[in-house]
Image 1 (tube, rainbow over the protein chains, first blue to last red):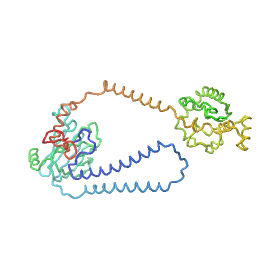
Image 2: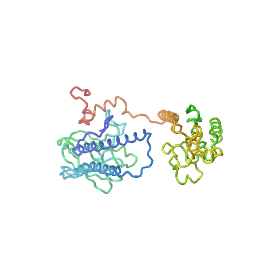
Image 3: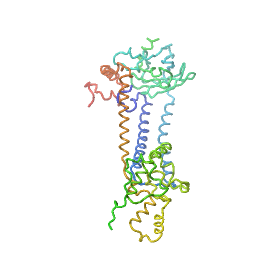
Image 4: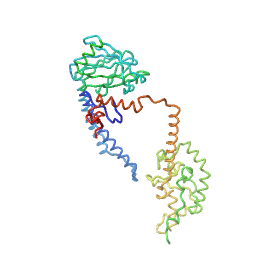
Length: 227
Length: 221
């Protein structure tokens, strides 16, 4: 989850998110360079007494400031596309979990082996146990085995929602009548929080997602209990 | 004879009064009265008192300010034919210092005589005549047109005033509008929350848990 005075993205829990962290550093560096250059030029322009009101043409500088941004854009696009294609690689998931968005909760279906279905509602602030995170905790967490590739199928029963877990680099829209797929792979055990990311009504901010990544044996015990 | 700047420099309009006398200077059309320093000052003050209300009102209607410079390009063809003076603002522009049109167009007999004399050798002109010719051609000297103003004090004053006003509004809101803070913002809850996050090793790579020393049970130095 996010922590106080956090400046950047949350720590990566999946390999794709690691790639995205590096890409974010790269793109942000370009952004800072361009912004500081522009800020410097603006400060120069505001602090000079010189004037020049008869510019007719400026072919050389126009060429430079067309070609150079094109190169910069290519430098941003190439790593971006690389990660995009990396997300779509064939990875043979071991488990498939379906999640349906509702107003205003998520429901999860683990139907590979048994028929396991449950709803996941946010815990209201008054019912939180001491030390729990406000607006982020849920009654039934999504327990999943760690270090295993999991296929998530995401859809909605009513309006648009979006299933997002930032530390895994996941955000997939839940569209009624459509099945969207994403791949989940966590390298560390623990709790990973996310929130609904598509406006869906009055309680859009109050339908969070909590993944509990556990070793496989714990997952098997849990799913046997839950059925 | 000794030439000093002060001998011919009529008192320029005080910068802090610029927003009251919009339009009353810079109107070079019509007779340029009295280049002599005494009458110039008096006339100027008189006209600016007379014209200030009308000028300000008409300028309010046209939404003129320092930013209007760009709207009428100085020295455009339309300007040179029509009634508008070349300097459309009271303030000459450093970036357009020498328009084709002179500042004063209706000259009295004495001024016309001077213009005739100008056609001859300039060494024949006295210093006072040269100054008079300058004043006919141009409204202000570079020193006058580039003078500083006290506008920044007004701006900063208004900025701080609005800061203060906003602060009052926010204070009122905190007292009468905002709801109670949730229990999770108390120090005790925040401490328990932090302990829970450290226990579950949230963000252990570069984030929060990475800064906690689990052996010594304290923040890393």
